[in-house]
Image 1 (spheres, rainbow, N blue to C red):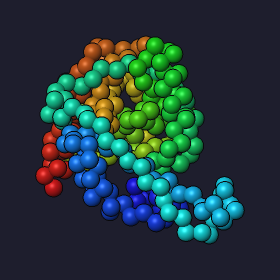
Image 2 (image 1 turned 90 degrees about the vertical axis):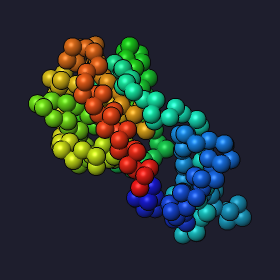
Image 3 (image 1 turned 30 degrees about the vertical axis):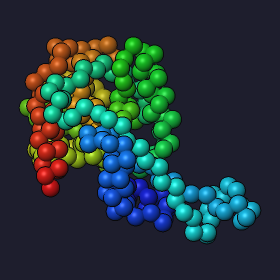
Amino acid sequence: MREGLAEARITGFDPERLALLTDELLAANGLVEAFIYWQITRGTPPWESGIQRPRVTKQRLTPTVVGFACAVPAVKTFEDPEVKRVALRPDTRWSRGRLKSISLLGGVLAAFEAEEAGADDAIMTRGELITEGTATNVFLYADGRFLTPSLDSAPMLAGVTRQLLIEENPTIDQRPVRAAELLEADEVMLVGTRTMVASVTHVDGKPIGGGQPGPRSRELLATLRRAIRRDVER
């Protein structure tokens, strides 16, 4: 959040406040296990300024802060990975993919196109390289090790779930990943906050491995559950 606000030149909100605001949000909704979403926008100039839609303004604006929470299953209930079929779609989003933005139309259209192709989700590509899913990061198991596209290989988000897994298992290889490697991999997985770990069994209708969830996706899910436990304990 801090890096995103700085790159977007949004000032006037300290991300350190999110911890307290989140506690208040959970209490207000009577939730313990929850999905929590925060959105910070630049704010609007006062009406009397006469400037309704400035691209750049020297005025100090008050950011608009929006948050919501909804109940989700407890982490301990995720015993088996979800199963998904995906379609490869060109990544038509802007080039600042590392910036978590509310400009999500490119990903939304990729999800629609995947559904129209009979798939559950999309894995996006820039040229021959993999970027990410529509709301997930991509992991593979090939040649006896886990790997995931490196953040500098193509514009993509540094997902929190991705980072937790890498911290828990530093042997995970981070490098550019070609789309062709998906079909050659033993297993392909999608990871994300609400997805946790999903096993990709088919890409563009072609089976990965035996076309069934494999042991490595279950291993990655167990690693994620362990990483979340450690994070909460910290």
